[in-house]
Image (cartoon, rainbow over all chains, first blue to last red; front, side, top):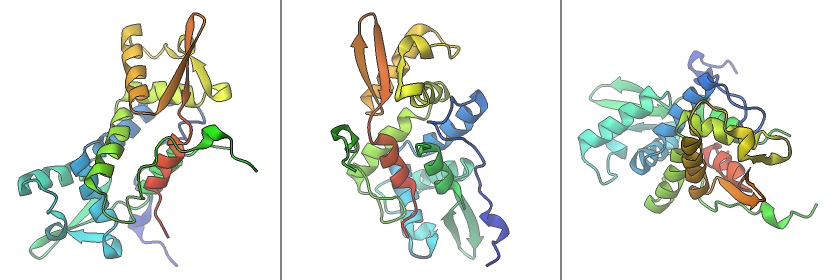
Length: 114
Length: 114
């Protein structure tokens, strides 16, 4: 199966934390990703998108997390800026999906090399 | 192979982000762990401990990250409080290691269930 162009890992960074000391540059990149997931509401929104059937969620499907709609928009913007979500406007709504490769890249950084 | 007692996950939290929407409680627990790794200096300190031969590092081995010694201590305390590092004083020095299971637990949360 041919991989669509957007399936390239969004995050080429970084070696596993257990394999060698992180460089300053890699530490900055990686810290920014962790930071994007360091807020409980943001994490729940991310989880809603990540677990949504088809891997994609309309903003209309995920905004019921107990905060105002502008706050939801703010968090989704932060997740997009950190490279964790991609978005696409179709008609009235914006649809979000997890950026390809990003979860696998983060998991790999946390996996103990053997 | 029998698992050593210390291999129990330190972090029973949480299901994979892609499997279902996170509960509020799980989101709080998980966000706190990500937050502990969301600072570049803290992440480099953590990586120094995690990649140190034997999996353990004396504070004297890891404090050369370009910040003051009190700042190093502050970051190490935050990592300990988040359950990511354990510490033990032996003689003059405090020794740190990655809390057993914590990296595997975090990686599992980020791994796409199939």
